[in-house]
Length: 371
Image (cartoon, rainbow, N blue to C red; front, side, top):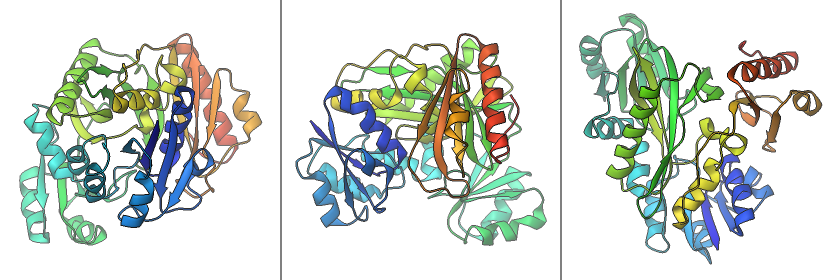
């Protein structure tokens, strides 16, 4: 069985590493000749919308998936006429437009922060009057890892924010005073069966995920039940196949949906060591129509992204319970170069091990929050 993957980043690389024990083979399409997935599979170098490159990708593959939600939806539509492609194009199209995403959440009965579409500076002024301040102006498309966003703390900042984002169609969103951020990872197979992982607590740095904890600290059973119900509604509404991540704000012990990712997700990297079935294997099982795996926790897990530079490998491996994943990418500010997962028998032990890991990162010159 050969699977074609749009995108050759670290997520594609980890999908292949999860698939080889199952006897699967992989071919990737990515514009970058040094894409990390090229280390572990056949790499077709070309643009995502290049018909010749797409033709090379689907040659002799049984189905196609993607590891990057900003691939052109039209490319996935083109592929579906030749081989099965999962998750479905509709999911990709919805996730690529923040307005469509918000409307899907609302149609599924999932609360979201107050928002308004904005297509001009005049509309921005009207939206601010109705939404209130402080607010966050977001481009409707192509925003991730903190990109495509501008805070508006008072009315005098509105015009600059509009210009900063290039005057493209945007969404104005009320800045939510949330207690914490969490995400839920869910999978739906081709036969409609679903599994949902325990909710994950996330910490961001400059809009980029830095640390995830599974299970979340001070976990609340009703939040898990709420997240599971919301995830299943979205999966069913989209007739979804594959892994899906939804990020939430926790506000007054309730969940407000922020955004979703129709793919394996950074906040699920902990599952490689921390869950009975990793999100990467689960995604492959789902798109192939295989039985979904169990999602039970193996302990208390923390995952930390290595951003911009890499601490010494020896120092990372000295942290008890540490599992290091290096992606083979050239260092660059804010770039995800790898991650480290720590596994522990208790929440307290997890925090001690994370504190040790944070100290290693600090000594390497990358400031880290204290546990």
